[in-house]
Length: 478
Ligand SMILES: NC(=O)C1=CN([C@@H]2O[C@H](COP(=O)(O)OP(=O)(O)OC[C@H]3O[C@@H](n4cnc5c(N)ncnc54)[C@H](O)[C@@H]3O)[C@@H](O)[C@H]2O)[C@@H](O)CC1
Ligand SMILES: [K+]
Figure 1 (spheres, rainbow, N blue to C red):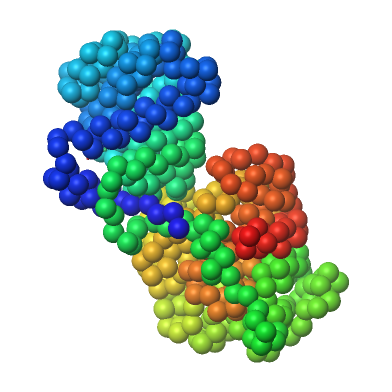
Figure 2 (cartoon, rainbow, N blue to C red):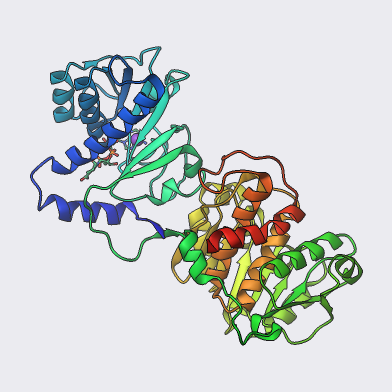
């Protein structure tokens, strides 16, 4: 499990550790780790550190201090290091002295050429959008320079990933002690480049503010058939989806459910012919199920079918797409079995009564807010999908922008429904489904299974994502 901790938690752990260490020891650890990553990057790019041009954007706080101390280390290895303070009257004094002693210099403006720029403007102390003096330096970052963010890209909110105005886009982010939520949640996550964690000895609580499942976590959660399994024990998924206008949504949701390990799929709706033509193994009509999936491609005027599924209070229900329209929190709160809501940003905005932009800019607050309001698990789709349930938020690390394609969400719904029917909680079903779906998207796109979300590949269509789910299962199970 990858975990991310809030600024408050990180600061508390830092205070506790600092009290036991000589002054400056923590910053020295951070700067040493940072300089080592920079040296490695310079060696890869130029063959050596000696003679390389390094620019430090130095903010007034300890983030600037880290950059200055790391710059001093690089200067001692023969790099030409220039620090540009955001505010010449407020620069970390110890860091500045170390840089000067190592032969580094200070300039008022950003040099036109650099091999590597260290962004030490703001770290976990940054608040709101970058101030003009900082934004002006960011604008001047020379084209072609490798940008290494210190702790986090300046302008990204460490706790939420929100970006208000200009912010640094880094090639590499070197973060200290713990991942911060803003490094894993968009829009911040798309500014970090590759994230490298430098341990500095912080002792952190077991429970993190944000979690990201990894292969082994998902493998542990996957419901697998045993020797005594029959199709009913493995879970029957009821799919209430599709309409005359959108029969394909039914086919894709069924595909996701079948590939998600359902023992059987029961289809209810007007697209039975289309479903059976593609999947003759599907049962048609109402009957006993272990989980319902309601909503994909329903169109309007079908609220009664959504209510009927939710009224089955002891059966887990996933509500997606058109099923989410006007969803009553009291109805959901009254349920005993798991409820998983899977909105995209627009649907989440409608449920919260805010503008879509507000959800996009504050995804963590939105997913938490919805989970709290409905007393349910909520999966907020997006470039970094978030799943909130019971006070825990998980961020999905496997997505790919290629999944932003018609029908991809229908496959996800069926898949998560199968996991609910297999006995997973709403939060686990959502997180595991997002993980497998993201991996399948990458496999279908021909993109690498690991790495940042912009990790290459080619366009995919939703059917291919469903078809790649078995490969995702196999890769997770190892
Ligand atoms: N506290 C510690 O023990 C450690 C801290 N470390 C570093 O220290 C950083 C935190 O340092 P600070 O608490 O001094 O805070 P920062 O250096 O992150 O930022 C605070 C400074 O930036 C200015 N600022 C805030 N918002 C701004 C904005 N929007 N635009 C422009 N300027 C803005 C503030 O006026 C303040 O001077 C961490 O991110 C990390 O890089 C590391 O050295 C590891 C140890
Ligand atoms: K920074």
